[in-house]
Image (cartoon, rainbow over all chains, first blue to last red; front, side, top):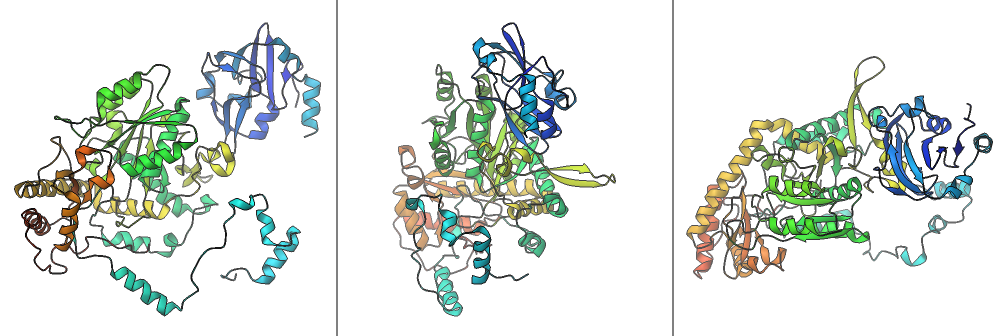
Length: 127
Length: 475
């Protein structure tokens, strides 16, 4: 499984795409595979302010329910409404159509703490 | 497989495998002060003597009374087939299915229960099942908090006092519970005060998660449920209807007046009145809340061979998987009682249930007329179904004296609602389809005598009602 080089990652298996002061967040292909078929994604309302490392949503598969943790602090500017009707996008296209929320980053320093692709690769290789 | 407790050898071997010296070490995580101390139990008795002592205790129950007691638990005729099916070993001894798909019969029975109750309440999703109406109502309140991410719930004082007590217990951990007063006088006396509800909903910076009202309310009165629902929804709150299932054969179901959640006591559906239960908590919701509803959900699907199959579904949010983040801490259900409700509903059918509800209402009208004629009028003017409050001077003493006349004159309202002075002289009485004209005459005659100060005549045991104050059947 290839981990995209242009993204940043967390130890909780979220990916983050930084574009200007906005960060798009989803879960990694590894996380999606571990969870199995995803049947429901619960996302926050637009406008809600997320705190780094706090739970902001829930992803539910046929066998487990996991919290989503905010990689960075900031206000939610968009959520992926497609996931309401097609949660399987998270399994099929985790880094594209399976994106979950877009956040306006409150503190750019927090993005520096995120893992790069190599570090995340090493994390999942270590199990 | 031996069907007895573990032998000392078994315990030694298990402790050896765990590397422990004593069973107590398994509880080391629990602080000493919180552990149970030695139980203060009398020494064991021979079975014969014990049975005789328990029989003597049971014989002290009055089973000769004509009962007009309802207040959340109702006497109904239950077809013998209900208990007969319950007693079959496949149902009676089977515990909650931990490997559910193997138990297709159990799953089918739960699926049928959910289908029957969904039809009755006119909502999409029914969970199977909860301990009793109070627990189901409290779970409904928690659902509104999770779904709205708000922490303040308003409950009408028309909801059963025991349910409100259970709600307070559940809400002790940081959630806010406030009571909506009842209208004090006039045409709407005894029903939820809509103006007060509107004020509570409009308090700035105090958003409300859910509004809870009962239909009929604790005093037997019919509530303006559609209006309560409109007010709740306008404030962004969810609306919880506490229902009595038999009444839904003649009253509008929660789904028809905009309730998001229905909760209630399932006892009237084929379950005998028993002191302390076991009873059955009904809980249903709209599809939008399916991920918030706790308890078992069973779905119908097809297996790999294309055959009909039943599955336990939406399990991932339950306690065994989500631990402290589970939708609730409910970890068992009332499958046997849910089965009783299913068999009852399937046996008597929709027309039968309508007859039960309408029969009770007709008996209640007869009762009300008879009691008013001897000087015990209703307290509230509004419409009721089969239960109502009457005003009797010195109600508690009258209630006690009526026992000597072989009559259980309902509930002393001063005991149930001590903080409501308007109910100080009240008795809450009910009739169902099993109430007879003889019993009603016995109650009215005895009440007339008591109110005029006449002593009781000797009561013929067993005359009229034969199962007034029910003893537990030990189910």
